[in-house]
Image (tube, rainbow, N blue to C red; front, side, top):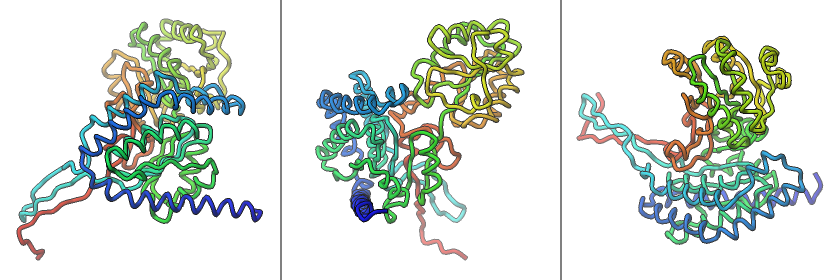
Length: 428
């Protein structure tokens, strides 16, 4: 490391230390903020996004131009792109979060012990949340709004490719905080693309950060899990499966397959593997693959599938483990719901799996035996989204098994404490 590099690293370390200290200082008044004040801040944020739509789109145009020159993939460009419609979605998402019930102080459970002690379990904020994400500038609004609603301060570190867009959206979030009289440092955006900033966050900023939420590709998540010295809500890639049972309605199966794969190919809830019951090969397989191909999807298939659909490319072992984030799907015939379960348990990232079936027993077995965060019946995997779950928005889909699982919304961004009321009891 040169002397200049060392100086630059020290500057980033100092910057991040200040951001961490400011976040920790903001966390206490935010945890004590009334539901009305947080609601007012969120409504003001949504208004600011609406009012500054042209400025945000202009900032996004700079990021898109830089991304194009950097050779970003079509999927990454789609994740980066903002439109007037997507900005309305961001605005609506903030308003939806504002309308949610405030989770802080909610009594989750209450019981009385034989000795007369009254015990309550009550929701509390986590404290300071660090969010590290790639490409998607909408995460700036989603994460900021969700953390605020849950009473948490948040440090946002977006990708270098979305720096201008995220900064423009972040300015709207700060405007809302100021309007409601809340600390401006309750939602902070790391202002540098230097990767050393991520390293500082993973160290915990001297105890300032209570939890890290990564949202991005496998390399980012693996780095966070490997290096983080604070708890992590893991969001792994979405290797999502769609299984079509022999009992499936054909028209429904075709429509769901096309939507699950092609509505937006670059999101984590897009289907990446199609599994078809071998007993339905003669009736369901070709119509589904035909519809996918006509929609512009490349098919990579097992040899058994290719005998029925020769236009498909041969699938390799790696295809069953790949999150394409593109108009590509792998296809395979399986021996009923049991074969689908075996394949999914071997290759899934435990994000989202769907079954298309009318047989209640097949659906029950699929739901009982597959251990993924989200399971769907007769619905597109693209519904794997906090907004579609009525959460307003999400920070990501947690694929781990501890604390948060599935869409991470306001409730998942809280912890709890116990309140015990006595009347003079002493322990014998």
